[in-house]
Image (cartoon, rainbow, N blue to C red; front, side, top):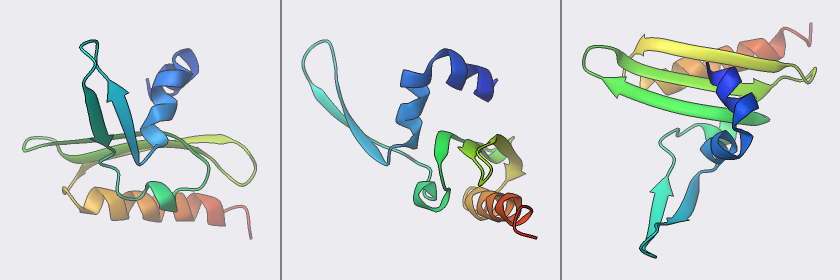
Length: 102
């Protein structure tokens, strides 16, 4: 679903790779929105980012990025903790990059 969303609505989902952005409401009020993905700067060539957390599901994180061979890679971490979803994801992204260097 993430890949479909990125392909069908690139303008919307490209915004998920920004650390922060200002949005103007119809009433003219400016909303400063901060991305909750704290490892954006550690995922090379990131194209999509979606965080999530509930008591039942735990910590979740989906990212899509281009690997060193320019392939689109989608990874989803499910059922982690609130903070460990980021370290889990960073490990998976790093492993996916290493597989091409051997």
